[in-house]
Image (cartoon, rainbow, N blue to C red; front, side, top):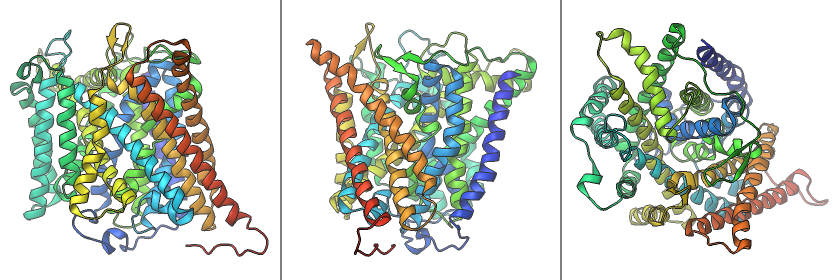
Length: 586
């Protein structure tokens, strides 16, 4: 019953926040119901295409969710206990993450669906715009690196596990079928009279058919390509997919895959909640993990990780994520039917993601001895919850837990797929904006350039810790978390300047800006310490350590530079020098 109360209380708090805070935000920004957004004004069938909130919400949700609200909360729970992770998920999503997502979406829509970097250019200066674009592009690269490795890992069977327990090749097959179904759905909606409702009724059941077919047609690269690392090969296959998907029209893959992924995610959440309810009432599910483990943990490299600030960059997408602002201003703002939809699509989706993060945390909370990575912990937990929900409906003796485990792994891979190709598309937008490119050949080149660094990262030899090679996502998760949260802080900084110049309540964004800026810069400074110790001791340093250090240093320099630019801009219009007129508002 304790686990059920945890989930119910979380849902009630988040629902109340949506009604109270969401309504207040809509009133403050005077959101309009008129269908005169950029999606209508600039409609081109490629990037600008209006979509109903019921269609856009699952697409936006699946794009921003991905592995963040799974991996982050589970890692934070392993480090510090489920209590600190849960409190940050709830408070962070309501007071920081939701406001960040909502204001980023509204700002983009009111600037003709332009990126947050363009908003910064208009309200700060061209130099700040250039720095912001560079920062966003690198932040997106880290997302691609981390999530490519996470997804590739779900397609590979660990050598110590039985196929029934870790059906990686089966998940790979189901994932390929899922993507093909998304393309088929997009084509059907575009070129036939099939309605969106009927399309979902047809293609959602086919997704479950693809799960059943997976074990019968497994794609096992370890057997097909002996002598190579199958996870690395899958990484390159995923990057090739990202290249093609990022250049496809939104109606062909982004929208249908996003809707399928979003409803798929709803089903997973529903099965999880139902299973927890049944298991709690039957007395089979209880919280086994401690509420609080301590103020300091040990990271993947054996270094000390203090709760402040590491908690706030580990949970990442479950509470606040700069990546969300790039999605909101990159693809979602180009499809928003009316401004009022920003309340559900922008603010509501962040709270929904927070609830999903709570469900992910619950998969850890029921384990006495957690083992495996976050994806394995999540899949085992979801399979356990779904088994409790479905077992009463099945004949006695029928065992479906192995199939449910595969289902949960496919869910995990599906969520990351949604982010991977959207992230590559967004990075292409940013790079083209940075280089002032606009043609189709330049779009192809920008996409290829975006994937160069992820491809190089896959080729770098793995760092070993305690005699075992660390997965690439563990090496980059700290950088991803720091850059992601720092991007959120810088986005909020740009929003603060915009609101101040418009004479609107800029304190909405200023408080979250200061908090996120402090936590992320603090975490980056901490991450430099171990590298400096190795360098001073004369010990051998792995190539990935050098790569991490250069990335961290560049993040610190870029962010501090942007802070200075914001301060200089703020000073000119908040307290203009005597004799100078205050700049006109855009």
